[in-house]
Image (cartoon, rainbow, N blue to C red):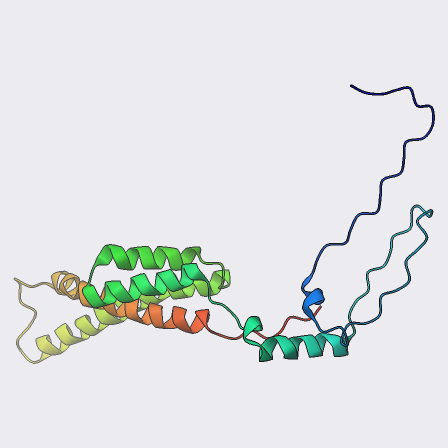
Length: 190
């Protein structure tokens, strides 16, 4: 039920508390003094948020990099991808490698271009290089007089090499993802 018996202005809502940021964890000595609060009766003016000085930012970045609490944690999705790629490369189980590449592509720790190169480019480059090497081998065999055997055409030879090539591509991709997962980013300013 609503009570409409009151004649007059509705009461003013109370002040909204500020959002919490990571600045509360800084030592009290490094925090700049808060600006004086505006009287509650003024409307229409926005209060300016106090920004830390460049010296305070540098001190906070140095404290974050020195403490293990500020250390960078790798993405669990990226670590799972690395594990699946490594397991697939060791065992030769193609669905594990495929799942590793898929999870690596879903990870948002890399830029779009880097993600496409690492997940799609490395296997493509590996397959292309091994096919070119197989073609070179067949060309040298033909020049030596042996020729390419009709029972084993070049396409069949390339397909017979595919499991080893995919295992190599999975191992290289896992190594690159491991480097990406544990790389250090410079502290962000502002």
